Image (cartoon, rainbow, N blue to C red; front, side, top):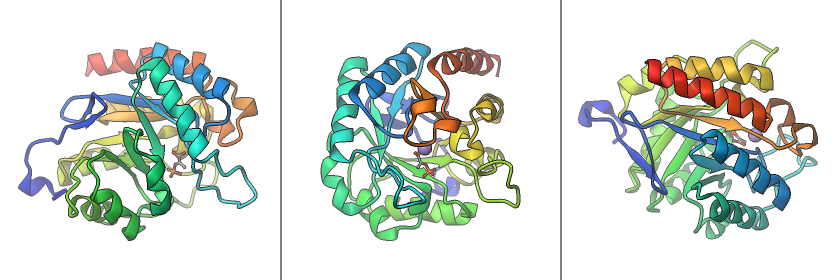
Length: 262
Ligand code: PEP
Ligand code: MN
């Protein structure tokens, strides 16, 4: 179902009124995790003002260490919904487990994290819903494995899948991961599904977000996912890779200009 061969036209996915794919470009921005009402509202307003079209924010966080902040849970999703009411931005948030799906009724797009890309039980379950799914590429997943993960969702009936390249494991240790820009033309060739790029988790460093974003736009991505925090130094998760609102604002100007030049 994800194969371009049987669906020559680009899929266009509708996330709460925002279109992705087939020439429609979306920017998902917001904090790694929802932390406080002030943090999420301030960040959301800044993202909207800069031109983001979808608000991101994690309430259930897949942290490497069990002792790290695990997210606010259902309360975090409520804060995200509040920010949606304030800004009008649709929201995307990660669901880590089937048991959490009950809290996601008002979330516009379900994010499947890199670590869950091959959680086939979860994939099948979101495949039964009528809601867009953002499928992140696994840390060491091949294109074929990634597309088969999309197939797990689509084969259950839900064909509203957007792919997200977020950096893969390579031998390089200076960056958190390596952004695979080749994924854009390759996925466009193999599949009709839109593909967006997440330079924040790829590099793990805020200063790399701008060049990687511009490379992604130039490479033909259908959108971006960028972590923004109103005060990155105080972030409970992924602070080093988060952009300040002013940095995000200037990046958005460049992204828009580059899109127009293509
Ligand atoms: C995230 O988007 O906050 C996240 C945890 O991403 P990934 O699954 O790509 O690591
Ligand atoms: Mn993060």
